[in-house]
Image (tube, rainbow, N blue to C red; front, side):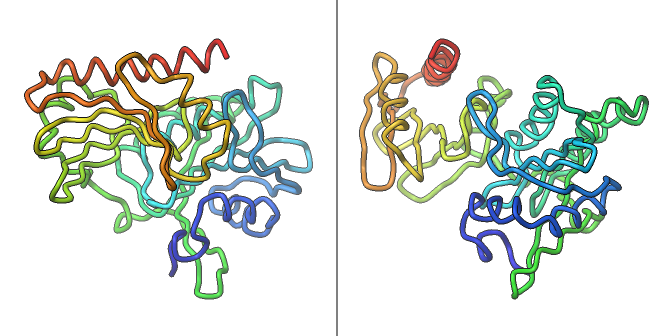
Length: 281
């Protein structure tokens, strides 16, 4: 079986295809006992974002589909989006009957989270926005979509997001951050994390280099003029904006001996600037 990266090369390409492929959507629905959808919309607009795919049944009931990015592995951001988008659709007046996170691997803790949310649905079936599930995405060599339920041997029992250099930092200052991974490439040790308010093109980071530490935010792909304008507007005092061929960046540099609390405070200052702009834009 092929991964999303091997099959489509981008999450956007696949979700655009999925919205026009009712057979694939209904394969997902059959796995978790939902009725068939008869139409679907890609990138359904919601405030400050969009839902990957929204399906509608013959009764105009709604199913939300959120797909993980090219990493394939479910993360806090997409787990949170799946439940949140279902609630948003309910708030818009729709009858929501389910929400699905599509991914290639998932940690047990996220499945436990979904099970905890589903308690409200199992208690009262009108809480369809709480009927949240995770389904495994995979493709044949012919690009046929073959979703499956996760089984005991496909669930990640413990997180393999190993933190070494940043373990103490995260425990004290970043416990509520959406941590993606720690990366050691020889010249820099990087803690990657995601601001919850932004889409998965944006990655925040703490870089530890030989002589300095950098705190910042990258926009990594599909950079448009409005992305550059957004980054320029949210650049806090002490940070600098720059643009290269493949990314746009806000960054501040600090001496190697800078206290960890300062690094955490500067990161939070950046996140506050993001939230302030999105709230009052």
